[in-house]
Picture 1 (tube, rainbow over the protein chains, first blue to last red):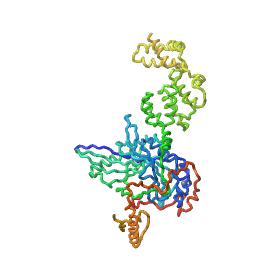
Picture 2 (cartoon, each protein chain N blue to C red; picture 1 turned 180 degrees about the vertical axis):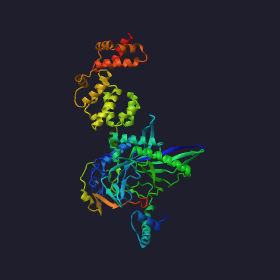
Picture 3 (cartoon, chains in turn red, blue; picture 1 turned 90 degrees about the horizontal axis):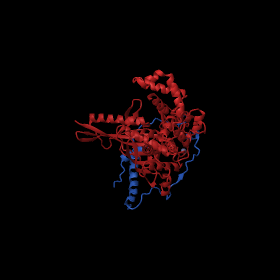
Picture 4 (cartoon, rainbow over the protein chains, first blue to last red; picture 1 turned 120 degrees about the horizontal axis):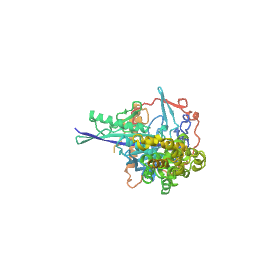
Length: 487
Length: 102
Ligand SMILES: [Zn+2]
């Protein structure tokens, strides 16, 4: 008996848009406010209150649609999706049913082997979020409606994902994209991204293909839970198929939740009833028409996307894929790095300075590297001093830190702090002579004891550098020392 | 086309709308709704092949507002109509799945 299988996953993602106010009213979106203090007649669903669409939310949705290579609908409308739940004060959610803002696109995701893969995007539409239920009161629930009416972009992929890690990669790439676009903070801790994967297997057994029933895992809000829940579902579905032979039929889609404590998926609903949301166009909201002019104005905000930037850093600057990925994790870092390189510095030097010192300082100060008070030009000057051997890499770190506190050039700082390396061969040679005179034993080991040569050489190097108070350029010291000992 | 609204459909609609109907009401609404739907069905005799679907009855679009905050209600105002509250929250009966699919 032969058996192998393909994992098939489609993903629904809800991304909270970073507008100042809610989708249909002027209530401010602020995280962590006292309950029910960012609410008004519109988002409380009071009779007679009328919604007015937030222009920034529409533009953010269109911009994201463009970044996901979607066709932007030139005419969209708002529909009511009816259901009853205490966190949904109007008893319907305003959403988009048959005319989503964006459809038929794709997202290119980086894979772990360094290649990339295109995942088709079925649609992306705008909808409002519900409030929040707290189930901590015995027979009662407490409802906070501060979140009700928050603009969400629901993005739906085609089932093109074939492993748990691919699904995580897509989620992380989407996070990077929406942050680059500035349309969402995409802060997982604040629930700005929520995932619902649809998972099944195509099992080939003795030449015959069987499809397992599709399961949907609800409400995942971390990359780890997303990846693990799919791995779990794969094992569970495989076991179930081997035990029961059950295959996909219309209507046997079931819903699972994620138990983070036990790290497993838990059945929530066996049979998905045909949902009856009774969608119909919302009479309170007029349609949105997107003109060429408006669309091109939004498209002008697109800029270079993170993966394109990452690939360019590898291709044009010769960075490793890992370095390029670290630099493009945040747009501010990537743009700053790029600017410094354009000021005429070696990309790898700038990269080292940023990844080894810049990001650490930024993290300590809870800011970004472009806000450390160092211009790309000054950073390039610092990199060039390392490149020219005027300062050591260790001194560069010290100078970098000082540069965040003063406007002085790295060369000035190096001089003041006595960090300039001695490159003068004559001066270094004198120190070498002295060290050789004082360390006859090490010299003879270096010259004629193959077992100890390497260690002795290192010791002599260290002595010379110590005598120079750390200012001798190690490269030159090694070169001169070698020449002296060979003589 | 079948315009008959049977008792099952009325019960389903009542569940989706969270209405509790008596036996006599179910019978009454079945008859009434059948008549209403039959009347509305007359529209289906019109030829609409070349007519664009109407998204809104007003010839208006793009009514948008700037993303600028306006004041919200106070917590006391927000909760003024609530049957029950607790610590600034709306207090509601525990939510149970009623299998209405909605
Ligand atoms: Zn409001």
